[in-house]
Length: 204
Image 1 (cartoon, rainbow, N blue to C red):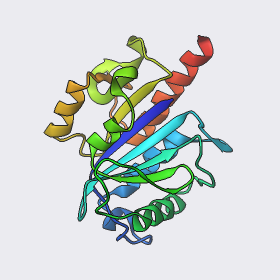
Image 2 (cartoon, one colour; image 1 turned 45 degrees about the horizontal axis):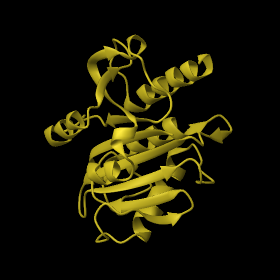
Image 3 (cartoon, rainbow, N blue to C red; image 1 turned 180 degrees about the horizontal axis):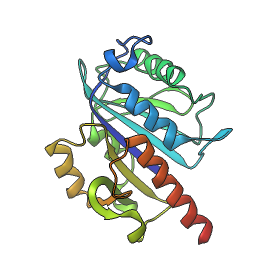
């Protein structure tokens, strides 16, 4: 499996945002939605080998994590508003005081957990996957022996990572990588990472 973990430092952990102004009312959840689309969707389909975690660290009841599993999820559309509706319904249907780090399934392939990065790490054995973290100043992805299966990539939103998350990822041994010399939006960076993995898998 490929896993992408997108950390939204201000993305709200409840369903209380407006679909008419997602960016202005959700702590920039719109950034995470675009990352979800880039990691999970391809033309006319989904990546069935990919799981995406949206770590919501803002507002009441934070942190919470939404997990979208490409193996099982259905009816995911590429437009941002439909993705926002999907997330909003999932957050509204799950308790905000559930057991910590335990994912509760809302529908096939979609689940929510109370907790932050620890909930993500508890969801899979971190010592069995290759871990990477996207950093602008890191070594270029084309210069590293990048894995393309059994891999997890951690991505920050427009605020990056706070010190606690950065330290936790370092403790997990996540290798810093970048996608080039120019600063890109997080969703575009994810697209490039996926493309690089696809190319290496095809060449193997």
